[in-house]
Image (tube, rainbow, N blue to C red; front, side, top):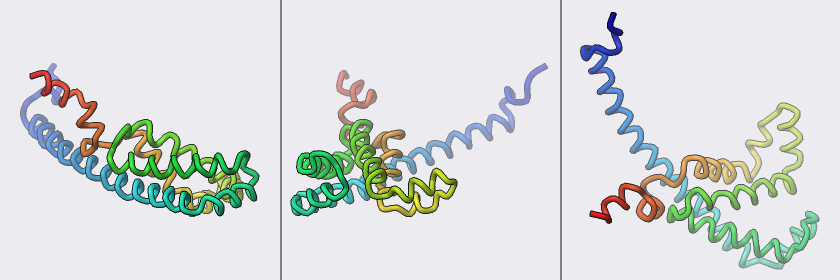
Length: 168
């Protein structure tokens, strides 16, 4: 007995329509990833640039938080945020760039948002979601998991489709 899923009738039409819708949704995925990259890349770059402009203030803040080697870490975090933000905007090294950004946001939670972490562990996620690092962390995780999308330098530099066209 043939399965109704194998027949070309109504199922075939539904399948074709579904696949067409999926293609359009995939275009939306690339647009969403581009918007996330541009928005949060700009925010990271702006934050990093601001830290570079106020290194003594950042060093004092890191010292007060008890972060070891505060001067070195102030320059490190400023660099990660500035260059990481620029790389996000460009879509360059899209699976690697979010990793140090995620790291800096985790450290931000550990050092400045301890009450939010305690509330999360106690079953109340609201303070965690409302904390300043959350959207930066969330955007970085999304870009790490899904990559930069097709509107990126990565796509043009590393895509198999682009590599195949260059061989022609």
